Length: 110
Image 1 (spheres, rainbow, N blue to C red):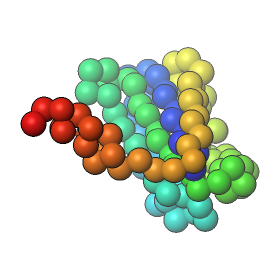
Image 2 (cartoon, helix red, strand yellow):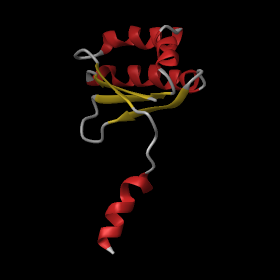
Image 3 (cartoon, rainbow, N blue to C red):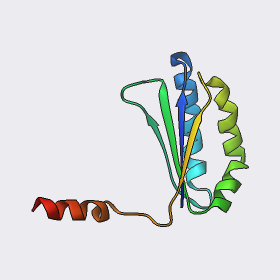
């Protein structure tokens, strides 16, 4: 599983335009082969900070997505950004449920 986080700093006057573009892409990305998750966030502290989070089942499907017309539209919208997009990726062998993380801590609190 691969988690891709794209952090974008957009000028205030371009925020709506970029948000609308990304929102329009969410459906097609979510239904792409191998997409496990695709979410779009606005920072509560900084209205100019946007974040797109994608989770993919394999590198092959992520690479296929990055060659898709939807990703090309997203890349085209990057000209609206105040500074280059920061992309962070993580590779995980399995998904950890919150109960696996919290269980040891919760036992210590009892």
